[in-house]
Length: 180
Image (cartoon, rainbow, N blue to C red; front, side, top):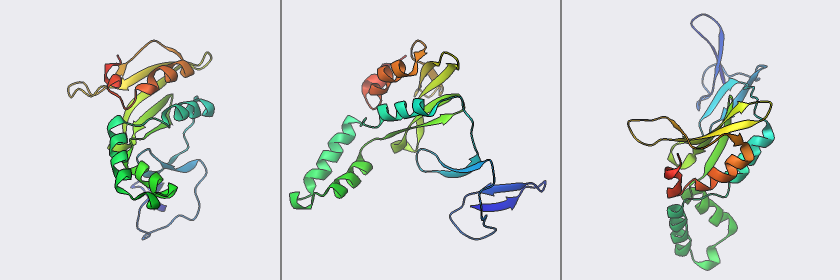
């Protein structure tokens, strides 16, 4: 973590691989070190959101076991190449992390955004909080048509549990592209 000055003389903080320059000794109040899905580390102001931690946890639990069918075949192929006596849990976990498509979720303002980490951490689905009192959400998926490049509303608004139960299982399948 580095500390520097902006052109106007205000302090600025950033993360860099090299330890050259002015290294910050402590994290200033109101800031945090943050790792985005996909592994990009940055330094940012602490984000305050109306989304509750247990809501994010519910979505993370729904997407954790999801894998792409093609990646599952690739994983099986790699495992078959390893002799049985060398198949340790650690080795199999390493192969699984490299082969399988994984999804991660994060809070951004009033949204829970799900990223597909295998393809550079691109956003793929989101749940937007519409009403903080009734906890009503709306579900969207990213449109992959070149001329649109935007979020597509994929259903009625409702409780987060209902929307996550309905739409998260489609991640990593062909059925995902039929949601709209």
